[in-house]
Length: 199
Image (tube, rainbow, N blue to C red):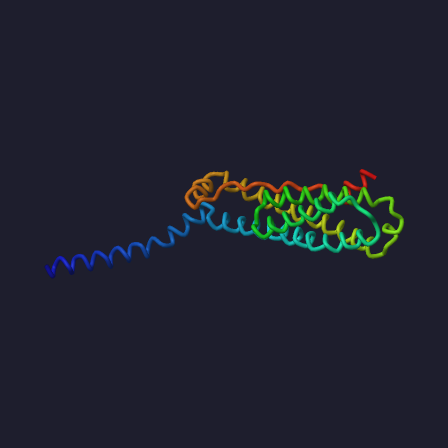
């Protein structure tokens, strides 16, 4: 029995030695199959997505001040105000949940509602001449441009990621680690552009 135990112990040590010798080969195979590159490209997608979320969050934070400023100078259809407020709340929830499709939908609703708001107040000379309103409008336009740019960068990162994992042998590695093609971000139409076109 002692011999068997000794044999078993020796076999275990031998197996460990063999695995140790094969470790560089496993690392080489993992590199050849693109595991490291998949991880790196995935991180780039994550960073780009975080930037979309940051800019959309900035947009939601600007809306309450915009509404307060407009309500000081103009009478606005309550249905428009409710639409702006509701779409803002929906966008905040989507950003917190990191729901990309939800962010697209809510952002589109907010753009539509804000465009209607601007269209209704476009002929109010007191509001249009107010420095605070003009500053808010400029900030909103800037944030919308940042959202568009962040979405463009995200889509480029997704394109690189999807193209890479579709190639052989990377697609084998992708299947093993559960890496699947990612969806693109549907860039929203800026509210300021919509309102300008409507005016």
